[in-house]
Image (cartoon, rainbow over all chains, first blue to last red; front, side, top):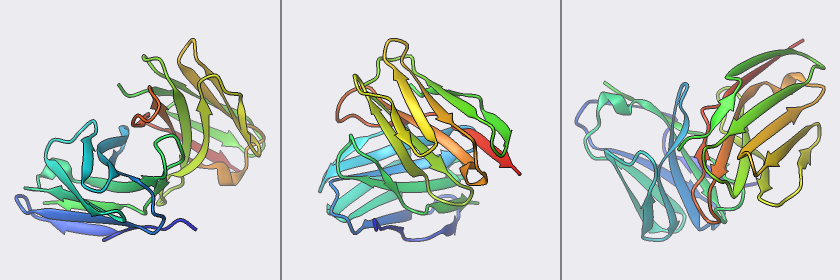
Length: 112
Length: 110
């Protein structure tokens, strides 16, 4: 079974705080993705990584950064959290951009 | 650009059929379909590649019209377990990123 774990299911942070969301996989897949999910907007890609230390911007990278120092771990960083970053954050992995993506359970982040 | 899904929501009785459409303004290389049940992560259903055949998964199948940049997901004789939000994801080139639609919420009632 594919296992994608995210550091927290629920997180509450204050405006201006630095926030780290972590995603860990046990499948040795090259590709890892960070999405945010908002009602009526579907899944929007923030960043993705196709190899260690490699990253590419998705559709909505503003206000976010990422880090991938090890193959199994992909972190999403909110440098200074804002209320408009309140959302569900989903991590996904894939062994190739062509193939199915496996999603983690998600982190519901609330910024107050 | 985000693909457009229609309808946004649909309510069915058990045993009824449904079609969910996904349209893109760009030429597509592939279309992916996912289902997300309430409170759970999205789960892959199938992928349709440019020049490929219609795919099937039990009573759920899909087609891909490359000329119209459209895909349709067909749910036949729906079951209660089909309830959830369906997303299409489109890819405009091989190895490119997936762009997901806004989702279609499907509710199957007994």
